[in-house]
Image (cartoon, rainbow, N blue to C red; front, side, top):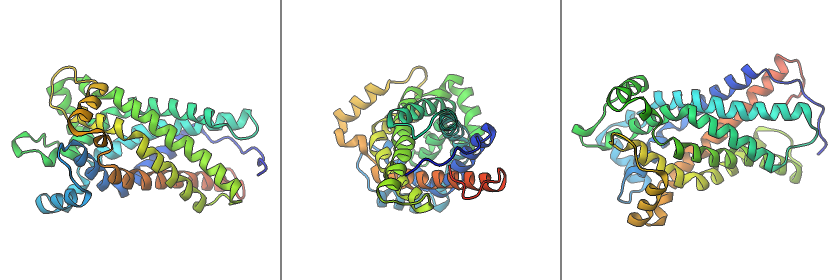
Length: 301
């Protein structure tokens, strides 16, 4: 496929706002699977998606599937705004100074940088989200009972210190680098390959196929980091928590290597649609912006 003429650069403010809005809107649809995924990951015993969903419905009610939604939205407003905003902005800089598509190595570097920076900014909301999503499975006397994400922040700072908001940062950043390389770089590359091999025009169908492929790879590659991150962030410990390596080794020793992919399908049911919705929404908003604000016809990213 021939390279189209250079598009007008997108304003950085638009790029970052679009990234956060896309992630927040997608989260409203997939948050229930995030709750199921987190519940499965903190359980030492085996549990199926159906049993976890059944327990929540029976013992806590339907609304519990949206437990921690405020934290999920704040996470997207921080993590996704930074990581997707930086990634898209890096691609904008590339398009304005190079011809042709960046190779996979360049895309991976862009995605890794964006993911690590986004993860650091988003870790406090991630800690609150994980704790709020898993609180219902604890005995009543052990529950934290955070009212919302801001109450969670205040309580964590009061009881554990401000640094506890960044508990599991190394695992979170490691996961984010893997996620973003698997998701963003793979999505960009898959979109290009599918379009060129199948002679498919830039469309929602192309975005959907590339998103589902990148979502599957993202889930598989990131699960061990996700398991470690979730367990570290739900621990009731004062002071320095165990490191990611010790948590992974302990999990494999006590539960087997397959436990590193515990909750794979609910994670994919969350990451897959979230990837599709976030990236498709993001691309469609860019298209509308180019057409109605920048005055470009048939505009695409």
